[in-house]
Length: 241
Image 1: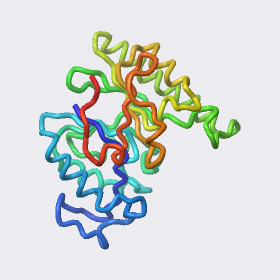
Image 2: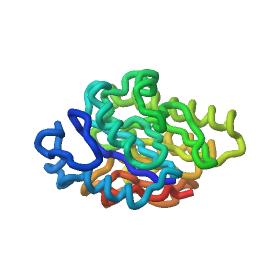
Image 3: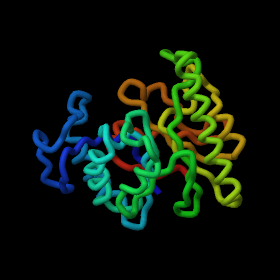
């Protein structure tokens, strides 16, 4: 089982895995962030690493698309790569207003989880987006608290379902936002994962200089694994299990 997040694709038409026109086929190139031709780097590393029998977990920020019909081009490109894909939302997944509509649109072999769970390679995978943590720079109690509490509740809903339906299986969580940071070393996301004995939490969202302060490794009983694609040098990595 592998993971990679924050692919930030933006194809504006159907494209193949190769022969992509950088000027004509992409709406939002990532060159400004130093991610030159990052889709080629993701593709090459993916083809070298992942087989058709593998599962790839992708926790958020998959596409820059604003509408679901635009995101289809990015999902179709990912679908052409090997393996089963399990996706969950990020803060830039503006097209994902309806879980039902996203699931209806996804190609066969791709799954969308959000406040629920699925089974992959003998593990139960639960996911939701997450949110900024209270006490982080930029936190606004009046606007962030409601979203934060709702996302904590959605994680608890996903893990409660996992525990009831698959009590014997170890649990892996997909979040987009980190559940703990140097400024906020504990959070309700961590509390919920500890209560449900989560083995590993995958998260993304952090880029560039933010990588230096990321919590990675065993922390308060949960293994935290940062899988932003630039942190991974654009290569899917094995999930810590």
